Length: 340
Image (cartoon, rainbow, N blue to C red):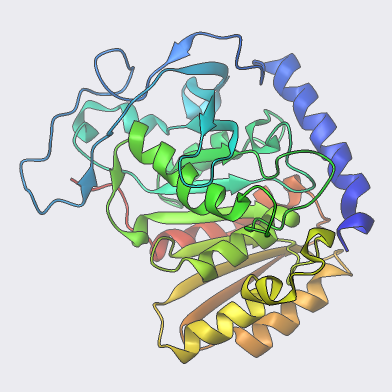
């Protein structure tokens, strides 16, 4: 299915990269001012260790300098998007990761509060750029707008590369003999966030959003790691693994199948996960498969919601619109907001 969806997503990537570079910055981590999201050199409010040892807040453990690539205007109040090249200690994979913190993160009154995190995954190959940094899709500006309107929690957003190259899909998984992309997305990228931001020590403050192949990765990794993530927002997702790299590894492929993972989650009694599916009404290939998954597995500990965007297509623009139509309110209602 991903081959048939590849061209429109590639076009989206091209437009997004163009918008990001022409409008407000560059994705090249060799340029831009250094940015730190904690400590005396950051623009964030100064923080101290929580007075309560039982606090949910986890203070940054190893802050580094990122390189600014752009600023988020409008409700984003010129907050920076910044990038680093990160070596994942658990996966052994090295890749670029972009990050953004909402305006509330910088407010003095929130200096000792931890914030919820959204990991945002692109579609297609998701390499070498994560298109959610793009100024045309306005993901970060939209989240800031919704937060100010009380329609969303203020999320830290982390945007890693999805694959190690633009030649193969790795299904957001640890395929034998290949880079451990499942571990990269589910363990290393969250570790980078915890090293650099004020976060919360609860699964209730972590979600993954993704589109197309990234939507599959979001769906799969939340079902596979329910003790680490509570919510997924799968946009126009694939439902089953289909990378050709699984050839000869059918057992491992099955272990990364969301249908199998959802069934097992219910069989062992949870914990509850919340899956906020989004699809455009014109996604004639994807939508029937999503409906089938919901009918068969969307019960018990697998809580689901489906947002259909009228006249929507398989595109990032459609999914941002869907997020404004109730998705983010539903997601936020089931997550932990900023707290000290």
